[in-house]
Image (cartoon, rainbow, N blue to C red):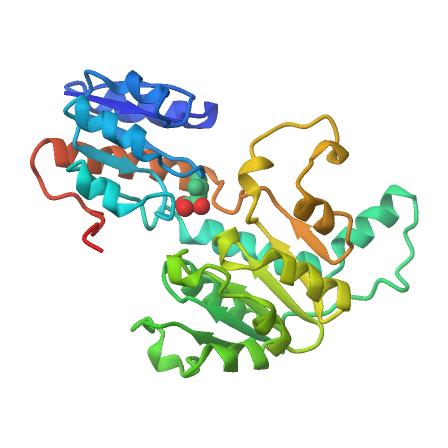
Length: 334
Ligand code: COI
């Protein structure tokens, strides 16, 4: 039995070896390349495929899997917005994912973005670089006592909520399907608008369904409190970036912490000679602001998360190949 992995990074190789050692009957092979119509050929002769990428999964590439008789694919991440499920149905492909590789990784990163903005770390860093160690006027704010609004209270949003509560915030939340584990806390608001209107800090943790593209648009920013802080460590497409830039320009928004961007595939995971060489206009409009922190889709990136992404995806791919029920199947019927 052979499983082929795409997009393998150096930091994943140790975990891959570990899994391989524990499964002597399974052959594994991999490439650093992501899964495209060109690289799909590499999977020929394999039984299952495991991949991860922020680029969309192309129909022509998925078709090749069908041509090679491969029907079991697994992604080693949570977001499924790169797939058109119709493609999977058309080519008879079954899919698993890894929904809980480490909610804490993303929740802790979210917390760090909030703290860095509230304590004006970018400004202090600049002052420090200029040997300016004075306090004034860079006075900060505390999470304690703030109202933190959470949009999406699944695995990640619920951990963010618990961290914020432990830090003394008043947490309010909106979710189309409230999390039963949080319902007794009385945090849920009936509408998204209430969360937008009442929060000092708003953080979004929803998947990117087609209907949710630009969920946070001009209208949403207009509803927020003056000076609110907005965090997105979910998907860039959830936010109308031009509206975000306008809200920062007008001073309506007090700050933004962004681990994802609409146009991130042109920028993140690449090395440029300088920031000026990044040609993306939205990136350029956001960077160099004291009240904006951008991290390159690294909220997930911890040793715990990467270990679990490799192990959970391979375990499930193997289960499918053995004809057993995987732990995390994806319902591709809609
Ligand atoms: C996800 O798990 O969906 C992420 O955003 C992480 C990334 C490796 C794709």
